[in-house]
Every structure is written in structure tokens, then in C-alpha cells.
Image (cartoon, rainbow, N blue to C red):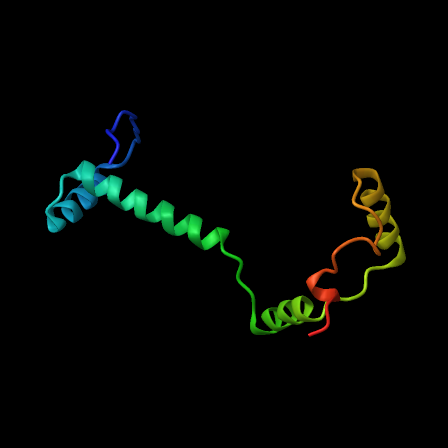
Length: 105
């Protein structure tokens, strides 16, 4: 663990301090250790909860269906991709390796 060099200060009520102190004592920790551990756990859980993509069953099925059976790109997108390949030297559709979705199983 890296050495602690940063400070964090907060103003709390006497009731909050008593509550936190009691909880720390029950865990056999100092108040500082209790607060740091509690805030750390809360931060990790909050980030994990809000960064995860959560889908309903119907959304999961629709997502899997889109991956397994993608729609054909519209002509404008095909033309834009062709212009891009020419600009960066990727050649035409006929010269490129077929994508996984293009290959027959």
C-alpha cells in the first residue's frame, strides 16, 4: 500500500462522530481507519454500479441478436467506408479481407 500523503477533512455533527466512533470501536479500528475503509468501499461499489452496463432480458436478447445477425449497412455508409479506405490506402471491398460477418460458416 502506498504511504498516505493526502488529507481529507469534513465537518460532521457530534451525533455523526459518536455513531462513527461506536462503529469503529465495534470493528476494533481507529476512527480514521473506519472512515477510510468505509468511504473506500462505498466509492468502489458506487463506481462499479454506475459503470456497469445493465440490460433487461429483452435488451440482452436484442443485443445478442444484433451481434449475431447484423443488418446490412446503408449505401451511404458503404460509400463513406469506401472513401475512407481509398484515403488511407486500404483498397476497395474486393481487395480487403472479408470480415467475420462476411464469411460463411
